[in-house]
Image 1 (tube, rainbow, N blue to C red):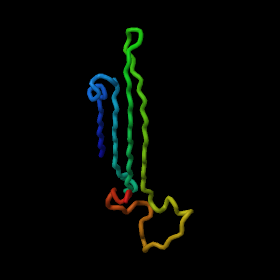
Image 2 (cartoon, helix red, strand yellow; image 1 turned 60 degrees about the vertical axis):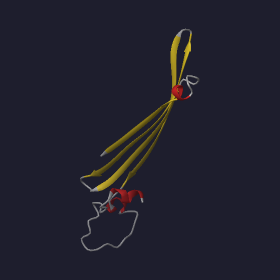
Image 3 (cartoon, rainbow, N blue to C red; image 1 turned 90 degrees about the vertical axis):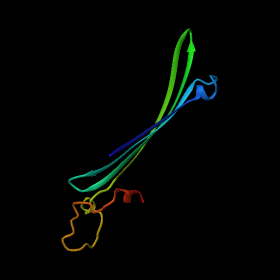
Image 4 (tube, rainbow, N blue to C red; image 1 turned 90 degrees about the horizontal axis):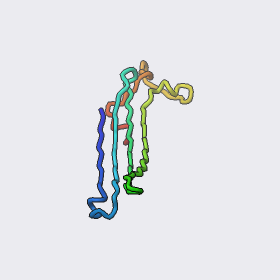
Length: 108
């Protein structure tokens, strides 16, 4: 599922017209499960925006700076690391799928 939250703060209203700018903060999040492997994944995106408006030569202009940071976490089944790791598992343990029951375990 997706979660999206956006918050914009009008600096012109706060400064009573002294500073014609807008600050924006947004968060977009997604939790998913890959059906073939039953593995969970997270994606979190943070957006910061600063916008400044001004008038020059009778025309209105706006300059905007946007910074975006993204964090992605994806669970992988054990067989992905079969050449890199050595482990002992119970008989008939399925290494092609993930066994996490709660997607929040990935970020604990």
